[in-house]
Length: 283
Image (cartoon, rainbow, N blue to C red; front, top):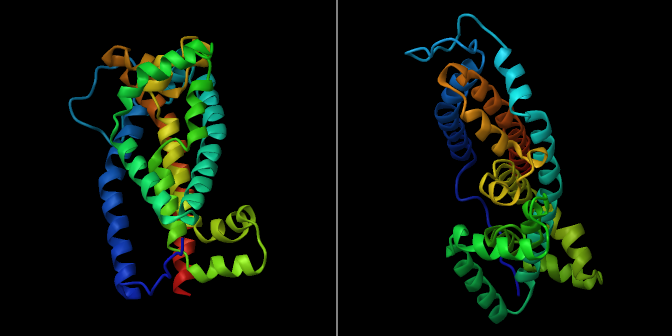
């Protein structure tokens, strides 16, 4: 299947920069105030009555909430479990999705149409409708109360959406590029790895960040498959902290801060990749 050549950007350089600036300002206005209140609440002294109004600078400042969150909620072990799942599931999911998307962009158009249509139908199926059959399969295999059910969806690319995004990205590459690879006698796998994949790095960065956040914040699957407290992931540990009384709510907020920081770091790294790609494109 022949790809379509990319044309010039529909927006002038100045307008594109303006829209990026406005988008960044919108994100700051929407997300920064809640994050500031979250951090401020986590620095409040536990055991005190809740303040009737939000305070950006608590009086007195205290880090006791973080100490109790790590102690009571077992956040350190839960963070390591979540990190283990993310380190395995995220690269595997992106790798499978990239391979499937590339294959989908290179096969016959009729087959592509059928697969894309099936993927769209699969996206319409609610995730909750698959809980019972998936649980039955993992229970039959004896994999419940392990971290395997949390990683297994990565073997299918996690979501058909990721495959479709990669399919559109690879399909947008110029057809002459693939023809040149054929002339150079590159195998499909080498063409994918050495030529096509480096050209869609922003897509890889975006899907990696999205997959990490969804995996890191996954609450439903651990709740269903994991029973041993030593295997709890971070969302399950935070659930136990949410049951504390209101005077200890800073402990829960401290745990929420600990859970939020890795996601912010991953998004910041992905944003750097986007900005570097835009600078190279404009250059």
